[in-house]
Length: 455
Ligand SMILES: *[C@@H]1O[C@H](CO)[C@@H](O)[C@H](O)[C@H]1NC(C)=O
Ligand SMILES: *[C@@H]1O[C@H](CO)[C@@H](O)[C@H](O)[C@H]1NC(C)=O
Ligand SMILES: *[C@@H]1O[C@H](CO)[C@@H](O)[C@H](O)[C@H]1NC(C)=O
Ligand SMILES: *[C@@H]1O[C@H](CO)[C@@H](O)[C@H](O)[C@H]1NC(C)=O
Ligand SMILES: *[C@@H]1O[C@H](CO)[C@@H](O)[C@H](O)[C@H]1NC(C)=O
Ligand SMILES: *[C@@H]1O[C@H](CO)[C@@H](O)[C@H](O)[C@H]1NC(C)=O
Ligand SMILES: *[C@@H]1O[C@H](CO)[C@@H](O)[C@H](O)[C@H]1NC(C)=O
Ligand SMILES: *[C@@H]1O[C@H](CO)[C@@H](O)[C@H](O)[C@H]1NC(C)=O
Ligand SMILES: *[C@@H]1O[C@H](CO)[C@@H](O)[C@H](O)[C@H]1NC(C)=O
Ligand SMILES: *[C@@H]1O[C@H](CO)[C@@H](O)[C@H](O)[C@H]1NC(C)=O
Ligand SMILES: *[C@@H]1O[C@H](CO)[C@@H](O)[C@H](O)[C@H]1NC(C)=O
Ligand SMILES: *[C@@H]1O[C@H](CO)[C@@H](O)[C@H](O)[C@H]1NC(C)=O
Image (cartoon, rainbow, N blue to C red; front, side, top):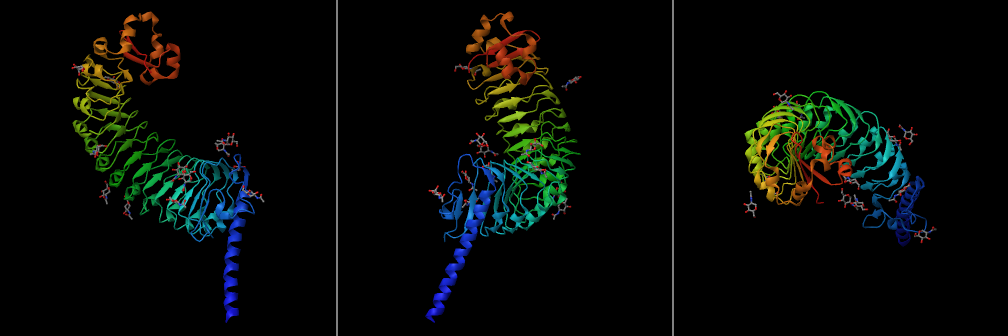
């Protein structure tokens, strides 16, 4: 009996030692696939150090099994070893921010307990291994900024517990699969910065838990945004800029009551601004610039009192700039240049005490510059040229830079073309030419210039 017990104890300690050794061996194999470790982070990954003391390695409470490996930002080169697959209790694996290359090993599919996999900011290439759809516990998959190619993976839709999926910044091609609408728990989806095309599937609207959606940049979709986008009732951030969207902005976007950021700039969106956008009371940033939007700013926009950023530049908008914009308390950046706005600048503009940057140039605005602007210490950039405005010097007489204009004869000012269109006016090049950091241009046509010299 005692003998049997001893055997049993021996057996237990032997087998756990064997497991620990095999995990140790697995990590040594992982190390051997690293070709450069310039800061010697892995120097204690050796035969005499217990594996739970290896840099970046965390074990379970028994001290036997590796549960987490975090090699983030170690500046490692080499490849990702298939030997990771022997770490049966691994839950977290991050090798983000290194220079690891080659394929993602399909053997990682053996890590059935894996919940978190962060491979972002490396140069992994090849296509996404379909075998990884076996990682049924995976909640986070971050592949951002790698060199992955091939069709955007469909196999990831077989990961039922995903909450976070970032495939952005790769070279994936093809259409967003309609099965991307099937995740029950997905909160974050990014496919931005790839080479995707085709239609955005309406099924995307079935992701009822989604909080952030990024689909723009370098992708060139066909058609526009599906109306079903409006069903994403938890959405907080939506960025579909620069991806060749056509058609109108679906009014259903007005149903996204939690939306904080809406970026649809640099597309081919047409039609008018849907009044429903004015019901997005949580909105802080709205960027709809560089489209072919027409019509007026809807009156309903008066409700967008939390906006800090409004960009509508380079569209075909017209009509008056609503007075209410002058009262939005949080407004910091207002860029409406390159439209056909008429009437005067809202006279209350400047009662928004946080206003930093506004650009209303290249419109058809007339009349006086609002006096309240002259009291604003937060202002850094003002661009008003190509309008018919008056009262610049009067408004800004208290600002130091205005005194400088007073002593500047037009011949001391940079040649007019150097200050050409709006954003170009504050480029480093212009600053180098003029020796100043910021430029205020009221009206090129009348050669009435102002300069800001402070900081
Ligand atoms: C293993 O690493 C530790 C810590 O860096 C070091 O003190 C020890 O000398 C190393 N052992 C071997 C065999 O290289
Ligand atoms: C990994 O380590 C970095 C610090 O080096 C830390 O910021 C990050 O949160 C860790 N990641 C995980 C998943 O534990
Ligand atoms: C990372 O490694 C590269 C060479 O592989 C080196 O040029 C660079 O300075 C390193 N960066 C840091 C922060 O160690
Ligand atoms: C594993 O990752 C999760 C985030 O997904 C984090 O909360 C947890 O602290 C990590 N565990 C370890 C041991 O790094
Ligand atoms: C992955 O790691 C990078 C670099 O540390 C980090 O910025 C990113 O937030 C991580 N992804 C997730 C989902 O935690
Ligand atoms: C991955 O990159 C390596 C070089 O870094 C290259 O030899 C290999 O052909 C690439 N594989 C694919 C599938 O692009
Ligand atoms: C990643 O892809 C880019 C663009 O195709 C290429 O220039 C670069 O060499 C690739 N890097 C590696 C390490 O394969
Ligand atoms: C998902 O969305 C599509 C199109 O919007 C719809 O026809 C379908 O019934 C939805 N599927 C599920 C499972 O909800
Ligand atoms: C989703 O959106 C479509 C189109 O806007 C609508 O007809 C449908 O009722 C919505 N479904 C749900 C579940 O809200
Ligand atoms: C506006 O912003 C404030 C401060 O961030 C916040 O407390 C308030 O809930 C916001 N209003 C809406 C409608 O989201
Ligand atoms: C402004 O309106 C005029 C005529 O009404 C039109 O020719 C011009 O293209 C419009 N400009 C913009 C930027 O919409
Ligand atoms: C600017 O500030 C001065 C002094 O605080 C005040 O008297 C004046 O009414 C203000 N002007 C505007 C237009 O707000």
